[in-house]
Image 1: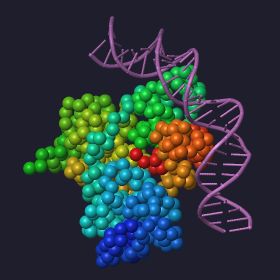
Image 2 (image 1 turned 120 degrees about the vertical axis):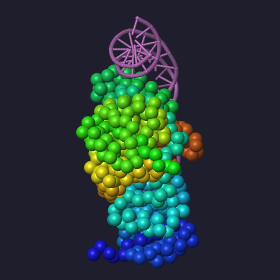
Image 3 (image 1 turned 180 degrees about the vertical axis):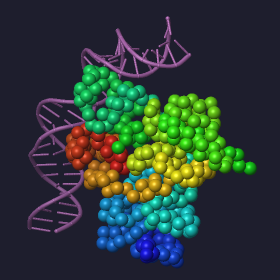
Image 4 (image 1 turned 90 degrees about the horizontal axis):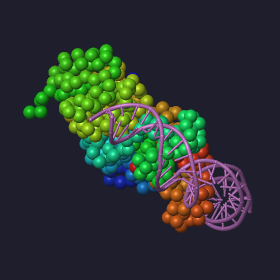
Length: 213
Length: 213
DNA sequence: AATTTCCTACCTGTTTTCCGGTAGTTTCGG
DNA sequence: CCGAAACTACCGGAAAACAGGTAGGAAATT
């Protein structure tokens, strides 16, 4: 039988929400509250010693950024699926939580039945979103797809090598070019990105997906 | 009535798959094939002049990277929802396609009814995945969450400023520190990341979510 | 009380980047 | 065939980063 109650932990600094969620989930069949926490620290301490199947995580806790917390939790309790619960509806925030290993993302205005559905799905090992989040993610606002510099083949090639920590001379010898040529490409890259130095250029490039893992 | 047939474009360099998809979707009620393309260039040309509601996009076309293509398509045809169709099942690839504005992601082994469901959902403005993709996304492999350096408050602060393109002297005056102190922090950061220079450090930091947009 | 960690600050010297140009060749589309 | 990109290559000088140290004081932990 796979039908033991799903153990749920909740972390939210808003006592009202915390209590509301607790009441709601206690009433749901097949779910049990393993613990409720008002801060990231409490939550981490609990997960170090105890188990939860699902963690409903408010990503705006006072003592820790949601991204950091998510990462830490995945380290100390890899079996716990994290459902991010948030008021933030920006695409970038959602993507970053996923990157940090969240198994789902819900806006706080989620309806009770949707919340329960998402918990069930997450417990089945599926990525899950509330409908509002799916709508946000499917419709990137025009402004969020910002103008990205048009790079030539050579420039992309060199950008990757720069991002990899290679120096101009390294790159020159790898590509059988003059270091001065590589310098020129680097200059053009900086100009296209409008960056004063590689640090900010690489940041932009990675954020815009020009550089893969 | 909202019940005109969904106009679907397909881009895939594998003729067999292309034809298979075409046949399959022509047979589906409420769907029409607007065009089939074997290369990114053809596909772009078509979308510049004609409309499609949904684009099934193989992200491994010979003449363009899926990420670039996705971005370009979103620029020239923002109303077209892109469903990525791929053999790649890496989390990072999926996340990056989403970042570039894809409305969904399907593995090529997707079943016909699942494909049709996903097209319908995408057309309704919802983010959509095949079940296999949802499973992959919900279960980040331990190796993908790689060991991330433990940074102190000051170090994080300075890391952000470096990523923003600030120089050592800039940072020093912003934080009312000696430039030499900032240099020390920078050195410690480089060491913690194991990077030879800021370019590769910033790349790692952004990829690991230490630096937000 | 002792240890560790963090933050601060310094020194010297080398390497690399950054900035501002110029310019010849190839390649590709109109 | 002409123009526009793209790729290649160069120069000189200023600014910044990088490397490998040392070191004192504060705060937290043991």
